[in-house]
Image (cartoon, rainbow, N blue to C red; front, side):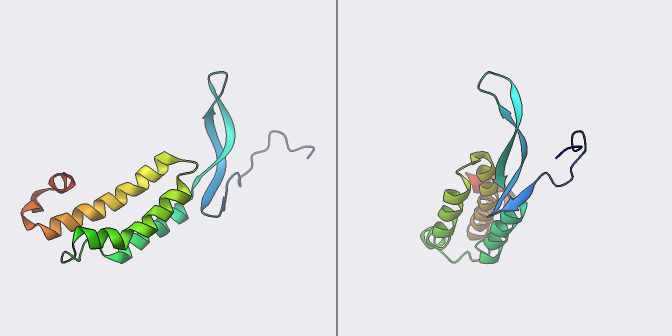
Length: 123
């Protein structure tokens, strides 16, 4: 549009199908960086996935075996990884840290001797 050059636009990003499309710095094939338009997992979708893990309350049910816990979480987690890892694997790694945290809490509740720290639960 004529007369639009130099004007600041507020809505440079939008959400669609669980992704946020927005301007991002990208590496150039010639070296250096350029500003391109790309997508990543939206904060709303990320929040829904984390809320789903919280509603499962896996960390509170210490009577379950690890196999039952894995069966309970496996299909949904695999679906999230398959859908959102196509464009940004780093964002999925950050998201899966929340699941790791939930599993560490489950280990702490199941094995009371590990109450001292989460670090022992991760090992």
